[in-house]
Amino acid sequence: MPEEVFESKLLKKVDMSDIKLPPNLVVRPLTIEDNENGFFELLAQLTKVGEISVEEYTARFNQMKSSKCYFVLVVADNEQNGKIIGTATLILEQKFIRQCALKGRVEEVVVDESARGTGLGKYLVLACTRLSKQLGVYKTTLECAPHNVKFYEKAGYSDAGEKYMQIRF
Image 1: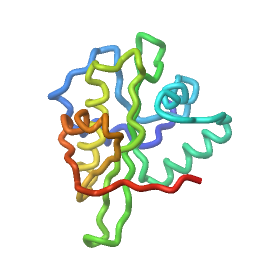
Image 2: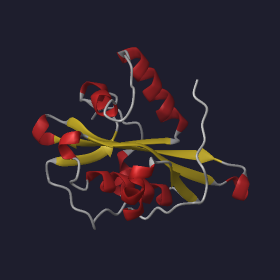
Image 3: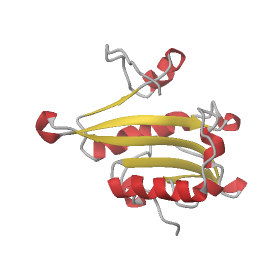
Image 4: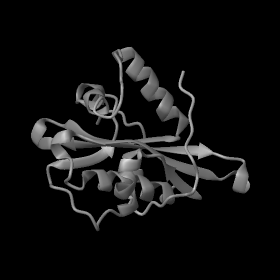
């Protein structure tokens, strides 16, 4: 079994029995080998990825794993030799507020264009959300483009009345 960014037993405790996936799809943690399974190509459907060497991938993977705050989920298609066709990341933010609480944040949700509209994105968002609840967060947030609001509302998210702002470097 390849090294995972987090222990798969955590994901197995998340109840996803209300949503069925085809038997050829496996939802699991990102592994050290997934850079060879189409992970970067999938992320490139969402945003810029750039050229990442095996050494850079391995170093970042190990940093994320050792922090115990990154839960990168992937969907592998066993009919396509384990090609990654979906991913979402749950990040735990460690806070001083609320008696040193944890806050969850869902990021980098993307489904391969060949599998969009199948419910896989909703599955990933719900898996991250339910995992965050299991890990004891006080809330889970995400940021999305206005055209994606309805998608996330279907997964139980609502407008928090806050404005997302940024500075790019």
